[in-house]
Image (tube, rainbow, N blue to C red; front, side, top):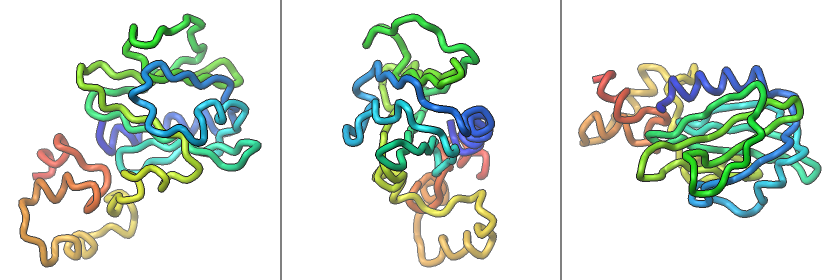
Length: 186
C-alpha cells in the first residue's frame, strides 16, 4: 500500500480506535517486530489518543501508565490490515499463518496485520516517539501537507541531477510515494 491507501486506513482506524483501550497485542511473526524497548505488551492497558500517517507508516498513538507510546507499522508491498468488529478467539501459532500481529481492544474489536508474500518486509515497532523509528525520522515532506505546493516541489528539484522517478520514490525527498504512484504521476 502507498500513501492514499495508508491514509484511508488512518481515517478508518482513527474513527474506530480513538478512546479505545488496548487489551491484547500478540506478535506471531517475530521477524516483523523491529523494536524491543518498550516491549509490545506495554501497549496493553494504553488508551488510543489518535491515528496518524508518516509517509507510508501508520502510527497508533496511545497514552499508557509509563507515558506516551506509539504502535508504528509499515505494510510493505504485500501487507494489509484486517479489521474485525469482533476479534476471532482462535489461537494463532507462530509461523503457521500470514498473520504477523494481532491487536485487540476493550470493546472486543481488533485487527490482524498480515503479509502474504514469501519475502517478509512488514515492520512493527513500539516506540515512545514516531521519530524513534529510523525510517520515519528521515522522511521528507508529505505531499498532502498544505505547505507542499508547486514552489516546495520546485525547491526539492533545484540543483538535482537525477531521474524523476527515483526522486519521487526517495522517501527522504518526498514521503509516501512508491513505485505504483510514481508511475501514475509520470
